Image (cartoon, each protein chain N blue to C red):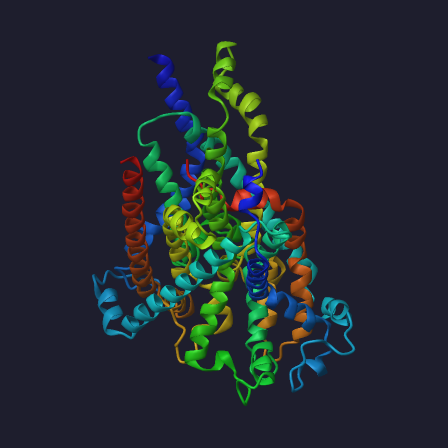
Length: 285
Length: 294
């Protein structure tokens, strides 16, 4: 029984090597956040001075106060970001849950092909379909509304959701469905009362990863399909600010940190779900 | 059997909403792109068929160099992501104290709004006051400030580094999940036979990771090929178009200059490349699964 413990025992130089490697790796991953945070503490005069200083002198949280007046729509941007991501998540769940159940439980002709087609949707996310989507949004009459950002967003999050949830439902024993069927339950009843409650952890994972994806990637549709400041989500709102001739960097960084705080809180509390949700598919049965 | 048929109808009823949605928002625009690419659609009210004119323009334009640049950009970005991600995963896979925390710390670039991460890089690349230039000067590697985004060659690599930064967490966590799926007995058997750590990594971990490496490379390839936000925010394709990739050029043509037809032809070309990647991927994965059966 001591074998697994023995195999994982590292010599001192191996340990040093691993920690040094991890330190280097995490430095790369976290450097922009550390630098961004330090910048948000530095007064402007110190930011624009040579030579470069890493650690702020006379650091203060002033930028976190002044940014509310220099970026007037800031509160709204955050609200919009949440509203857009939240709506996307709800629509994705409504569409994905029944579809994932169908893929997991029924053998019909063309099921594999159709699942592949859903996954292929992912290929066309981003800017590839921008022109026809722009025309489509225009003909729906939703340009410059929240819908112009929600509608395309949903389509490209559906594939991940279906993939995650159908593998989850597949692991629920079929005997449960059959037992319900023998007791005379209808198929819809079985789905609602037997499968859905058991699949709740899986659905939670899909909801969280959909929200995070929607929150992280709202840029190009919001940039192209909406020009009204009051509907802009945070990234586009800050981009307008970023594009100005003289960027007030410490305020921009302060605003960025307040904007990413929700995501960081989510990571902290839900990382267990997140990892399984975001990396599903790495391990294929 | 009657039950069977009603079951199949039920399955299609369940699928219908998602299918309809994706048809309207993805499949129809895809067809529309192809149709548009044969027209001179623009802001004008009249649209004419122009046959292959848009495609002809693409190739005698500067677009050929844009295609080459896109492939080079994508190649380096994906390769570096895969190398750093796999190395990172194998270190995070080591049973050392603190690894749970290290895994969480890997996630932020992936989870926070992409644009915001890019703003931070924008500042770090700043020549006069940015961190990278500042530290390089401090350590005496360069004498004068380097404005990374102001010159073609440095901007090219700067955008790659940022793209790698955004992509690395996903590769790392995905490869980590794949590593943890490898049965522990294999390692124990090899260990009993006296195989060292490096030998075990080379002879057990790496071979078993190949399918996951291929899958991840392909997923990464598709998203990198389409990468828009990073270049648009950092350089808008400049300076002198030296960071203009296909997607940036498409955006500029269609949305910036309102030449929908010409933009659509470029988009079709991107779709063709993407489909080829997918095809290659399916070929490769089917080879793996038949290989596994043998």
